[in-house]
Length: 146
Image 1 (tube, one colour):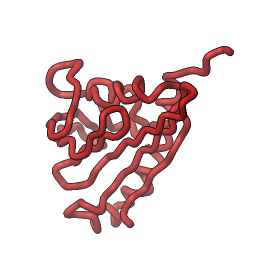
Image 2: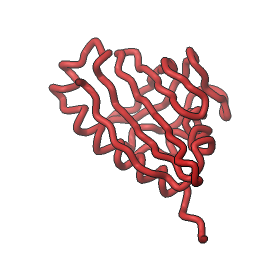
Image 3: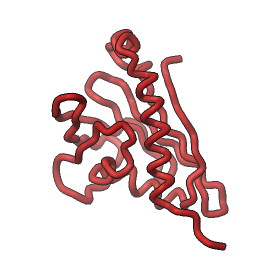
Image 4: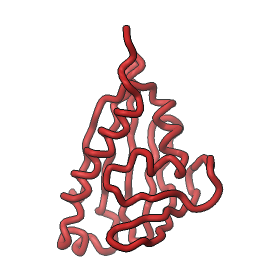
């Protein structure tokens, strides 16, 4: 299986977290890799299945990348594919108590250059970034005093 993922329980309803994920302009706020600089196009855009969106990125040098939303279930799931075929997937499970189990996955099983991604150790680097992203996401929703 060519996937790495991490899961974390976030102190926020799934609907609030999902709204961050469907707005590309918010991706830089939670990115733990340090590579996402900002969204191209109009701010506040809400993604849906089949939508294409671009991002300003930086990995050593700045570049732009285009993505297509390839999986979508309102409030529960969104995944986008880069032009190389690999996917970033977010799955949300509402725990019913105001908290959400969030799983982020880097899936290179659909990438045309999967062997190359493995050779340059992207899966391991991306797992580290996923964990940092989930930590940043958690920090956006501080625990509420009971």
